[in-house]
Length: 96
Image (cartoon, rainbow, N blue to C red; front, side, top):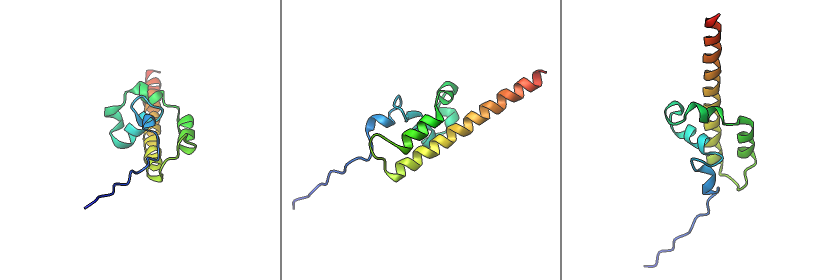
């Protein structure tokens, strides 16, 4: 029997989702615990507006599933940033 294998085309570039790629932190945040896998510097250095723009208008087309995973990761990073801001503001208020 002759088997025919159909090579599926990817909906994204592999370089985009690498750890040091433009959406690497967002991908990690989507699939793992943000506090355990990402450092505070990595979270705070993520530009939410720029990253949302990259997800909205990617260089190569994304599948809908990948876009939803990336948006989920972006929301987790946003929540963690808000937590950091809350903790810092509480520590400042308790000093005075």
